[in-house]
Amino acid sequence: MGVIVSKPRSSGRASSGAAQSVWLRRSPTPRNEPPLSRERITEAAIALLDEEGMERLTMRHLAERLGVGATTLYWHIDTKDDVIDLAIDAIFAEAPLPEGDTGSWQENVVALLSGCRAMLLRHPWSAALPLRRRPSIGPNFLTWLEFLQATLARAGFEGRQVQAACWVLYNHVQGSTASQSSLRWSGTERAAAQEQLRMQQDSYPTLVAYEYMLDDAWDENFDLGLKYILDGLQAQIAASH
Amino acid sequence: MGVIVSKPRSSGRASSGAAQSVWLRRSPTPRNEPPLSRERITEAAIALLDEEGMERLTMRHLAERLGVGATTLYWHIDTKDDVIDLAIDAIFAEAPLPEGDTGSWQENVVALLSGCRAMLLRHPWSAALPLRRRPSIGPNFLTWLEFLQATLARAGFEGRQVQAACWVLYNHVQGSTASQSSLRWSGTERAAAQEQLRMQQDSYPTLVAYEYMLDDAWDENFDLGLKYILDGLQAQIAASH
DNA sequence: CCGGCACCCGATCACTGTTCGAGAACCACT
DNA sequence: AGTGGTTCTCGAACAGTGATCGGGTGCCGG
Image (tube, rainbow over all chains, first blue to last red; front, side, top):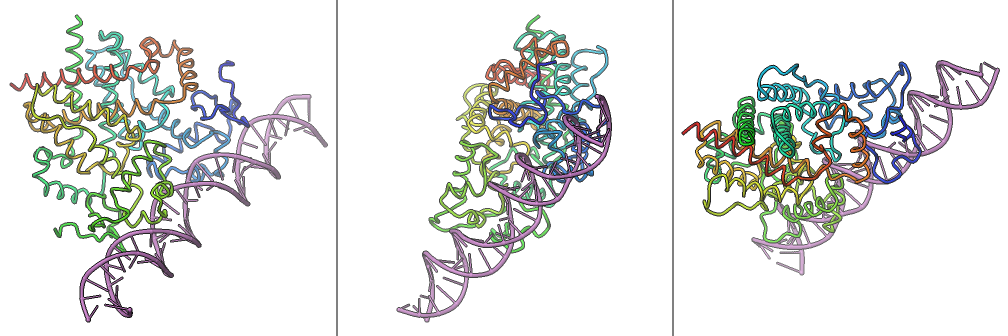
């Protein structure tokens, strides 16, 4: 201890301008059973986000859900962004880390990413993940990423290759689930957009031909795309002996 | 004509609930040279976003920049989301579409994605792209996507493969640029996070070993990741004869 | 019994997106 | 020149936002 020095309710917090990430400060309640805690706030935030979406996440709504005054939250967290950071990290605890080393590294990666994908789809608001101005350095996210990188390192990648492979795979899960979650729009508008697209077939022949935005073969697209990536990674390993 | 019926300033707009996408309504100013136009608003919005970022994009700021009352904007657009949709689509006009069919399809894809990446990095707020609740159906975005899909279709992909390949590639550009743009955080906090990560080396040995979040080899990671994807796609083509 | 600490909250501030209705500017046509 | 209507502008206002401040509880060790 002693590394993280900032007090929970410091009068001049983050004197050097921007507030620090939640993960760099320690929780202000080391006691036994406080009535309100970061954990309870995070839990309620996730429930609220799942039920009503990102734009309905409000300090007042969240407080009401917890049966608490709105400003009370600010004793436990510094900022609304903190709540979102905590929620995002918490859901990564739901992504299962496959046991043992059964099977090829490809099978391990597929299992890991599939579990993560299912988790992200359960929480559609996670599409907001990449837009956070600060990177994710929550413990659960780091654990998940560590697992992925370790799997790749064990598969035979080295140095820069590990990072590159890791980000390609992560972007694939994150990007495809974000698209899928965002594209759950109203049926009427969707129909209008499809009509509009079909009317402009001369401008977008390929998009129309391959039914851009018309079918919902999310699973197939994800699996096939993942296969492509894994094939490319396998080629890299083969080339490196 | 006659397809898009909603009036620009309709009293009860989008009577069926959610507002329609900008692209499904027509511009309210078919006149010669109106002082304020969608184009000028879009232009100013992009400049504002580039200079001050997403959270500083405000109707009032935008209006002030245009030397105009805040509420004036609402005659030209229905909603702030419309402005963002317009801005996002407008920057896709900056992504160059390589001329002709010189070179292999891989080279064409690399050129296309590199141009898109440079454009997205010039406008870091584009990281917010995937989180929009409605999908991108602006003309410039569709043109760009059409070009990518057409390139892939010409390369020999068929049916579902085209879509899957297209999304893998798109997610790679979008995801990597979003990460890079988001990770431009303050040096002090970054140092603190690195310190924290190094302290927990026991928990995250691989992340520390491969310098997660320590180096900024964005270009190398992007290129290498793209190579993996292209190799995987090449394997698909080879398998399909 | 009491001082101090952990925790809570009502009032309030500056600001947000958006609506409303009153107006100004322009146009075609008499 | 005048009139009527469409096109465009805007100030005032509304409900709601994140966040701060200072004054409160209630509890616990002494």
